[in-house]
Amino acid sequence: MMDPVIVIAASCLVGLAVVAFALLRAWHEWLDYKRQELERSRNAARLSIDTPEDQRGAVGAARIELADLRERIRKLEAIASGVEL
Image 1 (cartoon, helix red, strand yellow):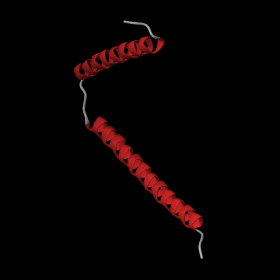
Image 2 (cartoon, helix red, strand yellow; image 1 turned 90 degrees about the vertical axis):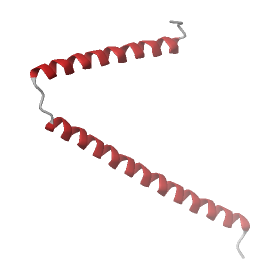
Image 3 (cartoon, one colour; image 1 turned 180 degrees about the horizontal axis):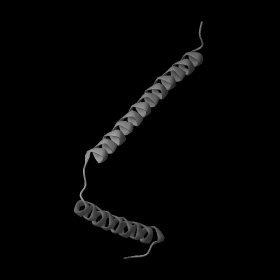
Image 4 (cartoon, rainbow, N blue to C red; image 1 turned 180 degrees about the vertical axis):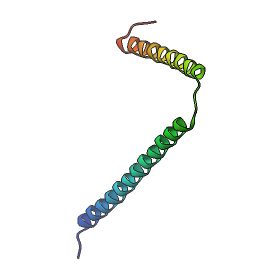
């Protein structure tokens, strides 16, 4: 007859294989989702027709966003170093 330890070990291996397969499948699905998201954003960028005024507005918005991100990074670095703002 089979030893109970062998049965438990085999069950654990099968369970681990099932979980690993499910995680691998989820990872591939997530990558496909991100690829589709990138394609949609590329297609939207190709289809949009910007006038020079719109481009200036986009540059200004990008600068504001960059400044906001830099401020957030500065605050996070201050928190990490223990400096009170």
